[in-house]
Amino acid sequence: MLIEINMKSTRTYTMTTRAEAVEATRTGILDAVVKLSQERLLAEIGLDAVADRAGVSVQTILRHFGSRAALIEIAARRAQDAVVEERRAPVGDVPEAIRILVDHYEERGASVLLLLAQEATEELVAGVTRSGKSLHRAWVEEVFAPHLLLGQAARDELVDLLVVATDVYTWKLLRLDRGLSRTRTQARMELLVRTVLTGLGTTSEK
Image (cartoon, rainbow, N blue to C red; front, side, top):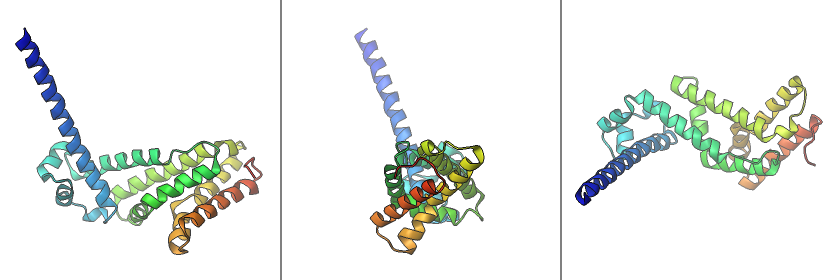
């Protein structure tokens, strides 16, 4: 009986260890895709490059994901899930929301701009950026919800303006093109948001 229990425990441990190893390999491959996408155009990210970065074989990648297209799609979803968590902000708190957003752009802004530069020529990228734009608008609607208690037409107008005020290109214009410090960029974006809110007669904080 003791031997039988030990054998079952050993099998359970072995299966758990194997499953953890499989998941670690899968995660490593997905992370490699995300990191490569921050450095080069999608067309330049072949399975060989992913395999080299992840420290696995191309056959291993295909065994886990089936194809390059499936790999890119799953990696994009994983990256977007991470973005949602990174950008999570308290509802109605304008300064904190902008701080969190600028932190996100400081970390990922350059790679987002690289993706946007490809959306007109790469259908896979276009799908990713469409989803990203929808996520950004949903973020605006959620975070600034207390300021959006308006009729539908006025609400849509306000959301449009807030999307622009908090867009990655707004960060780029201030931070990269103007060369402002991170602190000044954040202050400018917060001022822009408050100006939009106040200008449309909402209940934003003074």
